[in-house]
Image (cartoon, rainbow, N blue to C red; front, side, top):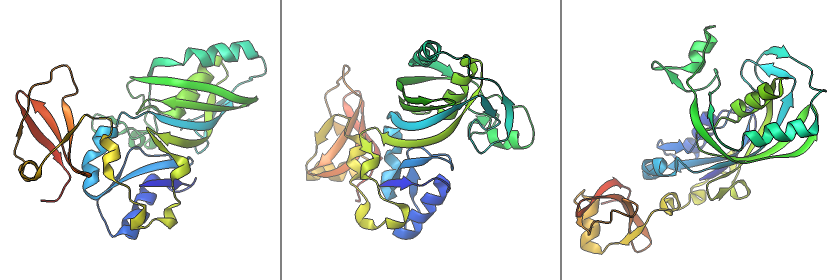
Length: 280
């Protein structure tokens, strides 16, 4: 389900709205949005929650505003200001060079106020206790990063990034490299993989009719069609015979006609069901 989250509520608030609207407790998501952010929130419902991991690596696209000269404790507008610095000395050429330096891969440190776990505890829990929190850096990929309009100190930007990338950290790191500091002042998610914000609905408009076929979550996997006997075997967890394919994707989406039955994994000469979504 594609939901257009407004600024204000948490992603969990939206999940709760959908749970109540559908009468379904099994509702997950393909990545949260911070409360101040808005845009596309992709929810998975019912047995489709089992497929979320297959879309975890989908890139995400955003539009937003980076505000130069002000650093906050949360790297966004909700946190207290911890530093200010002049930005008027920055030239267009310097700005272009710094923005360009972040395209591609880089090691990104998640925000102190984030859900990343440190020794089993959420980073934001430690930060709220007043601890100095520095989550370990991790590799991210910035495949697109463009300044749409520079009305300094605000930089309107467009970006496409790998899953797990924090746009708050990107804004913070751009400000640090420019020498003036920065935070993410506004954010809107416009796409998650092949799914677009233009096709999303407001949380209050959610109905069962808005639930889409879950097969889109595995559309990138090789497909195998199964007959009735094979379908019965798969839904009961029994493997299917299959020729080894070492040079191909080891995961295969299994369909009975238009129905997604399961995702199987090639193990030797067998295709073993790993995630079954069809009813028996």
